[in-house]
Image (cartoon, rainbow, N blue to C red; front, top):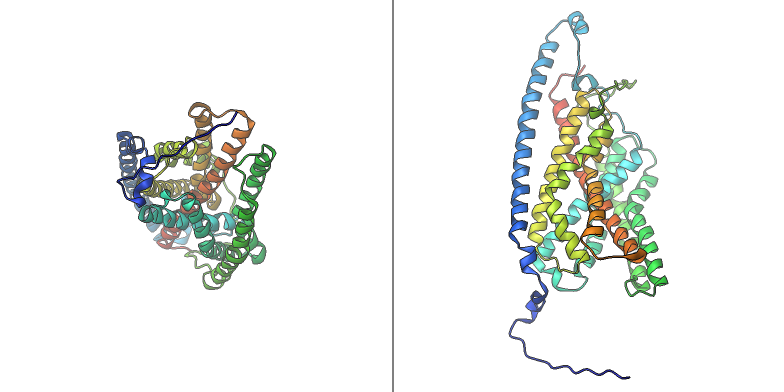
Amino acid sequence: MSFTYEVKFEKAEGSFHRRFEQYLDVNFFQHKIHWFAVFNSFMMVIFLTGMVTIILVRTLRKDYARYAMEDELDNIERDMSDEYGWKLVHGDVFRPVKHTMWLAALYGNGVQFIAQAVVVIALSIAGSLFMESGAVLNTIIFSGALISFIGGYMSGSFYAQNDGKNWIKAMALSTTLFPGTCFCILSVLNTVAWARHSMVAIPFLYIVLMFVIFVFVTFPLSLAGTIVGRNWNGVANYPCRIKRIPSPVPYKKWYLTPMSISIFGGLLPFGSVFIEMYFLFTSFWNYKVYYVYGFMLLAFLILMIVSACISVVGTYFLLNAENHRWQWTAFTSSASTAVYVFLYSIHFYFYKTKMTGLYQAVFYFGYTSIFCFALSLTCGAMGYLSASAFVRAIYKNIKCD
């Protein structure tokens, strides 16, 4: 049996450059719920930042007044007074963090992703990249390679400021952390696709091209950034001296532990972008073209602001509980947002898609894992940046012995 078909060409009235608009689902992406969600998240950001600012300013003002009164006491009276709070750990708060190499790699990649996200979203808004097949993905790959200098710079300077000695190993870890993770996951996905004779497998020439970009663009720029960072910004200028013997961390209630702050810290950032995640997942897995990058830019800015506020508040609670190990908590309290996004992706898979079988599940959770890993680095880096600036600011304004 033979099948035939015929094609009839008709002259279109629209412009050639606007030919892609017929595939856009305007009623879905520009629904009133989408506008209301963005407005609601924006109002939540204003309320949260205002509340955090008022609480911290009033609390810090009382702390400064109390510490100023203690500074006016004689040495004997000062020894007899019961000193407590975040000033008590001023000699330990800038102590080099444990597992410095890993935090430097995560932090450097996260700052790189923040810059990369801004560049990609801005180019998507300005150039309508969604109209060309694969244009957004190619922009992500090439911009990530070119912006790797920033990741190397931030990672190298952070590692040097925390008395890191093996900078070559730290640079290699920072450069290969995210690409290596993606390579492992994509290798599994490609193996499954080849075994099923699927057309979604990444072509071999495309893999070779990405390897060439990594070797000749990403790696040299990351190396250059690391060298510049450790030489230009590798000397820490802390407002307080570090004591030789670290102070013990007292036992506190469960809600003041780093684990609790890290787990619950991601709830508010996830809640602020929950609706936008629905539109992103729908466009990616339900074959809709995502084109409202203005919404994405607003959601990204909201996410960064909320992540910064959460990390600052969590760091203050931790320091006020006389726990000077704040660095990892500042990073993970915002990075845990990705955990809630992944949990939401499980709900989306079972209740919002019609996917079945091992093949589709492997691809769905494989690509979602890559996205969540990048999101955790982005939020974590923003949280650490904000918490670090906050810690330096409050200890700069006190009198340290």
